[in-house]
Structure formats: C-alpha cells, structure tokens
Image (tube, rainbow, N blue to C red; front, top):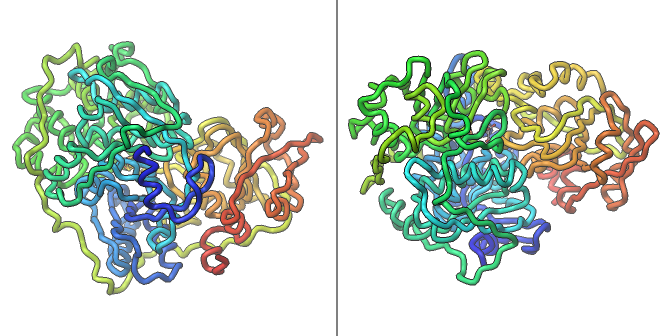
Length: 636
Ligand code: MIC
Ligand code: SF4
C-alpha cells in the first residue's frame, strides 16, 4: 500500500477507498486562520458543541494583521475569546504564518489535519495527510464530524538525483506546475518517493507540499523518515515522530519522475502559477519589487540564505526588497544569530511574521511594476495593484533580482552557495501560544455580524444568468482579498458588495436586480483560496446555481455547504449556448436531483444536458439550503 492510502485507511469512518467514491475521514487536528476563522467559529458556535472534539485545534492570527481600523483588532479579540471558551489553542498575531508554525510546533506524521486555508497541505512535509477546506467543514471537524472527500488517485512523484547549487525546492514544484498546470492535480494526491527525497530537508519538502495546492491537488505528501525525525528532534519533538512510508511494493494510480540534477532555476510569469519559464530566458527584465516570505518560503533556512547572500552587499536602488520571516521562532533565531543585521544593512525592509504582501496586506507594487515574490499565487490583482506583473520564484532567484535590479539566473551570478544547515536545536518558546481555559466571555465587536439564514431548496427554480466567465476563475476573482476588503470577512452584507468586483463591476447590482441568479463558468472554476466567502457572498446575493465545465475541489464543497447547486455541462461545447441575461427554468430540480434523473434545460430554443453527482448526504445538504441548516435540523 502507498503512504496516502495507509493514512486514509487508518482514518476511514465510512465509504470505500475506490477512486471517485466518497470517503469520510476522522480528523485528528484542525487549524484556522483569522480571515476564514471568524466565520468558521461563528458556525462552530451555532452547532452548540461546548468543546472541540479533535486531538488539537489551533486558531492562528496571521492574515489580517494590518490594523487600519477597528475591524481586524475586533476579530482578533473574538478569535482569542472564542478559542479560550471552546478548547482551542490560540496563536496571536506575531507568532507567524499558520502553516509554518504548525509544521514547527504542532504537526504530527501520520495524523490527519484540515485547515480553513488552502495551503494546509504544507503539513504533508512531515508526513501528515493535510487538506485545505472551507471554514464550515473545519467547524464540523471541530464538532467531531468526519471530513468528506472524493477518493483521489494517488500519483507517485519519483524524485531522482540531487539539486544543483542555487536550484531549490521551489523549482521542483514550479517544474510540476509547468508539466501539469493548475488543474493537473485535481482529484489526485501526489506522494513523493525515490532517492531524491532523502536529499530534501523538511522545510524544502514543505515548500513543495505547500504549492501542491496550486496544482489543484487534493493534497500532497512526503514520507516521514529519518530526516523528519531529525527535524522533529531539533524542534524538541522527537516523541511525535513515527515512521510513515509506503510499502516497498506499493502500487500507485499513476507515476511521474523528476530528475533533480537536471532542474534549473524557474519562474512563474503573470498571472498564473503554471505559466512557468526558465529564469535564464527572462534575463534582464527590470524588477521593481522583490518580496521574500509567505507560507511557501519563510523558513529558517530561507531566511539564513537571505542573510548570508546579502552580507556586505547593497540591493539595487530601483528595487524594493521586503522580507517576512515565517514565524516568531525563525525571526528570533535570525535576530539572535546577529545575521538579521546583514539583511537590514543591505537595504531590505523587514515585515512582521505574517502573510503580508502575499494577500495584499500592504506592499502593493507601483503601477505596472514587475514584482518577484517567493509566494505561491500571482493571480491578477492579488497584490493590490491590478496592472502589476507578479512573478513567482525561489528565494535564490529573488535575491539575485534584488541585488541586480533585474531577473538574473543565480547559478551564473553567485559563486558557491552558502551552506545553510538547520540548527542543532531550534529556539523553542511556546509561551506565546495561549492554552484554553474553557471559560470566559466571548467578545464580539461591531464588525462581527450574525450568520445569515438561507432558505431550503425550492422544488423548481426560475433564474437569470447574471455572469458568464472563462477558464480558471479563482476565488480571488470571485471575492478579492487585500487590505481594504479582508477586514470585512466577518461582515457578510458588507463584503458581498465586492463580489466579482474586479471581473465585472456591475455584477452585484445585476444579481440583486433578479430573484434567482445563475453563474456560468468554464474549466477549474473556483481554484485557489479556500475562502468560503466566495460561495457565501454569491448565495447572499441570490445565486442559486453555478454551471461550469469543471469545478475546483474546495470551492465545489463550499458551494454545496451553502446551498448553491453546482452543475456541469454534459457536453462542454454547450458552454457556448448560454449567454448573459438568458432565463433558465430548472423545473422540478429538487425531484430530479432526488431521483437521479436526467437534468435538461432549454436555453434559446436548445436543449442542454447538465450533469451532477451528489451523494445522498450532499443532496440532503442542498435540499436543506446548506450544511448549517442540515445540521441544525438534525436531519441526519
Ligand atoms: C490565500 O492564500 O489565498 C489565503 C488568503 O490564505 C486563502 C484563505 C483566505 O482567503 O482567507 C487560502 O489559501 O485558502
Ligand atoms: Fe498566507 Fe499567502 Fe500562505 Fe495564504 S498563501 S496562507 S495568504 S502566506
């Protein structure tokens, strides 16, 4: 058996491990972050479960740390007090980015983890089976419910050889994105194996599992081996280590090989993580901004590489460099080593340990800027500047650009790469995690609005097409983030006003002008962030149905969770037959879905067959008008 199947088998609550069928998994740990956490905890509260039923649940504050008004600070207080009340460990702002901190201090090989953040698979770097999910699914897991996924294919990624100097883990995942694209991982778990695995440290593995999300993968995992043991030992957590490896005769649904020795520095061009080119082919492109950090590349080793490479050097005068250490642990060690000096002295701007520019919380680049970032997403406008050209690359490539002011291949710029080894013992100070006392009042500021109530599904729906979009629409397109909008995550009426704002500024008015709305999408609709607001806000605006060619996993689950019916074209060419403002009658849709009958709509005189595939559980959720109604009605 392969490793992923072993962990699934151990956590299987119901279902059979047949590719394509639904499996329910017991969840050992959960994590939330502040931008999705407020909604998740409001939903948890509505379930009336006094104390979380997981082995460990941690609530991190790392996204909304720019406090330009009362909203974010209000949310932080709410999160702190609700965590204390319900048995959740609270990690306040300043402790670091959830995925980095969880890997350092809490993750355990072989355990299951779900998080209300799409990059939760970072935990796969130490052999966890970790999934990104909507906040409501995380709330359910905290309440002791299993987590439902469609049994994925398990793909072996066989790593051979060894990375050359200045080529890094980021280039491995960029290479996978180049080969497979942002939709190539859908319905798959990527499991890494082969000799090359032994050449990668845990933080390097975590860079890869983190960005497995950009492949659209269900999750991504490395074995838990001697290297994992060594990492946990240095974190003073050797007791958490267990060996988790595939059997020597394990079988997989598919396999591909990457020879690490042949890789060279890569870079993802605007505006998609799979738009990957060789760095040397873009040589000489002027760079205005470089940002190093994010949950992908902010580990101790990444920061020490910055410190060593920038020593006694000065960044280019036309390039701004920001550096955000991933955690308080990393930042403390950088400071105590004295090497932070090299970074400051080279002209870099040090940001707090948080998501920061990755989610548009500050550092929006100048008009039409070229910005090189060691992050994981470069969707248009995500940086806060619509016409900025954001590229994704390794810290090595980022440093070369910061020093020269242009895209430069680090393998030709620098001499031998400084040897960065992990410290014998990481600096441990767990005093900044707040353990729950299970009492006290929950403090709610005026930014926290109550959850909306949604109606059950009617028998028939008469609706208008209020939006038609193309391939790879991300949840950043559906509901943008950034410093202005993120503080409204706990205020659905206010945040809904920004729905599809960057795609079509008339969307909200149009949606409000009709009773029931339909959105038509194409391939991989809803890729990217796990934010359930991208389903909640459309539902709040009256969207009842989304028809696409294909959906991304987390968004599909979120649509069902909030009672929006996700349908796909039986014949993808029929996408062309529907246009904006068309009226669509979904006659007897409830009964059709209930009895698994054919669903055919008539648009502009043409019949269009639509597919759907719901389990009995999902049908009940849709009929109830969403998961929360379903739970409250006690239907199950
Ligand atoms: C992201 O990287 O897009 C985010 C912000 O971390 C999101 C979560 C959110 O929208 O709050 C994610 O990855 O799920
Ligand atoms: Fe934060 Fe960026 Fe990571 Fe999302 S991808 S968790 S915004 S650092």
